[in-house]
Figure 1 (cartoon, one colour):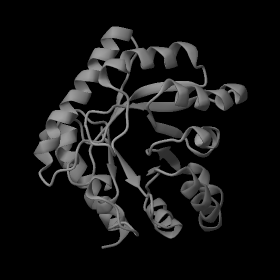
Figure 2 (cartoon, one colour; figure 1 turned 90 degrees about the vertical axis):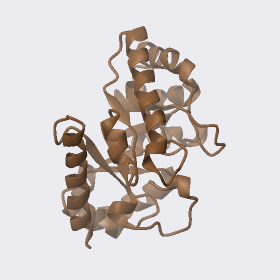
Figure 3 (cartoon, one colour; figure 1 turned 180 degrees about the vertical axis):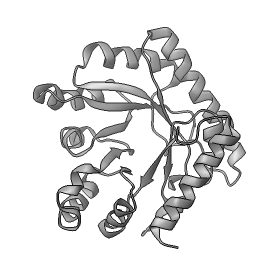
Figure 4 (cartoon, rainbow, N blue to C red; figure 1 turned 45 degrees about the vertical axis):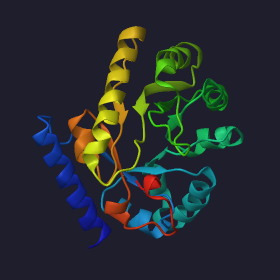
Length: 243
């Protein structure tokens, strides 16, 4: 199937999951996770109407974006590209300019480094706080108890950032139901943080190709889908890294 057909199928399945959960179809965004996939595939998804994408490496997106200028012209500016991977401190300034949002803030240090160039330029960068709910060493994120404090610090002290919500990656399992307690926990952490801080956190980014229906049932507002849109990655990764 073509990428356009894959996107159509995924959007239909997302809408069906919304209906089963008693939510409005169209209330959950589909993020096309294009990391490791070439610019031609991104351009194909773009021409099929996709605008929201996710990449995990700053240098990879920087190079891909240059190539997309040739393929899409000024249209590349319409791509809503989010950083969804762990952000190294020395890449924060570049990330602040390359991405339209950063969904993986997990320390105040990273937030401050993102804020500096944004505040200087009068730009406001939307961010999500990544929460660690798994003991796996490959998972990143802030401890749940620290979420309200980090939300408050960003909201009150960092004028170049807008904290929009939370994201997380559960431990990988072939059974999507195994992820349900983690999705539910993130929603509870979000609700508690909103109550503790009085700051609205409307976005919950959780759920990937194999478990997004469960994530939607538990309140996800954005699902990150890679394999079901672009096919298998172009290089080997461990199962838990698959989007």
